[in-house]
Length: 452
Image (tube, rainbow, N blue to C red):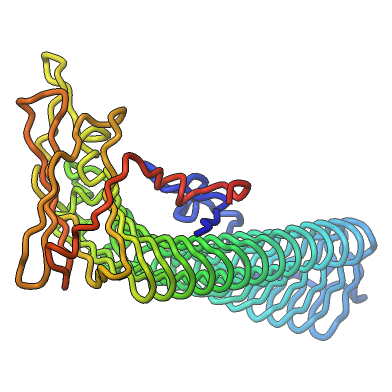
């Protein structure tokens, strides 16, 4: 199975390299009051300040240089050549023409940046179009932004809509005053939604991210889709849902959410982040569900050591096809990465927050005739804990696979046990258990495009 990549995302540590989708301080424009100018006698004639005013049904044309427009009440503005700036209010239509234009559209107005690298802001229910060039567009309220051609950056702060169009775009919905709707269009786009928003990658190999209460769909192509639940945002919202769509996608859920692979041979992962000793971690109690769908999928349990602490569960369903279920060594190896503390003697000791016994999660549809269960051994460079024993125990609903990990450097150190529930399987069904020394799941998830 080929794993495709992502351009700007990584989920190690605080997660997401270059992931500024949740940075509410990124405010490209300040609110601008609706102008109330006195219109000169001739349409399109600048007043002494050099501003071109227009109102009513006037057509106001630029001078060919860097013009400034102030238009209202159904007027039409034509920027022409030059780097123009314009403020539009009350049903105005404005075309920027050539140049790198700066346009604020308000109150049912519509603005077209056209050629150049333009900056456009929609307020109220105004509509802005970037046109050709790498444009920057912002929707503050309930308006619409459409990037057009080029690698555009679109930010939807309210309950508006953003559409990338052609090109490799970045389209983000913050949901500050209501849930936004964003989509990438053609190209390899980065699309994200927060606080109840909706994100769609559409065509291309996209990266789509859904935050608290949001949904994201990769669309066609080999996409990366992530559901992320964070206590830093509205914890009254449900966890997110992400769908890979068509293609061989990489789909994961972090700290909670539903991840669906759908068609294709997908890579799925469930991951916990944070420290159980952190007060915020107590709010990260959402279950994680992985659903592979059609195809020969790989479903990974990563960092699930803390499931018992968080009071949540991880459910993995392979769906149709010959699926592989992988238990990362993080389920016990985290004892080496994050949970040793140094005592006065300098000897490494397990943190009191680290659970010695915990459930990893549940495989809901393991089929021994075609599915595979793989356990990754511990990396000695990361942790001295190594799985020394596995035991399959029959239960009323299937089989519990119990993993025992011991500290190979300290015989007096506590033993760690982890339990995986396998629904519908018998102990004999798990005879084909595969043990591997190392599986670089981070490299698999975030594989560079050149290596794909």
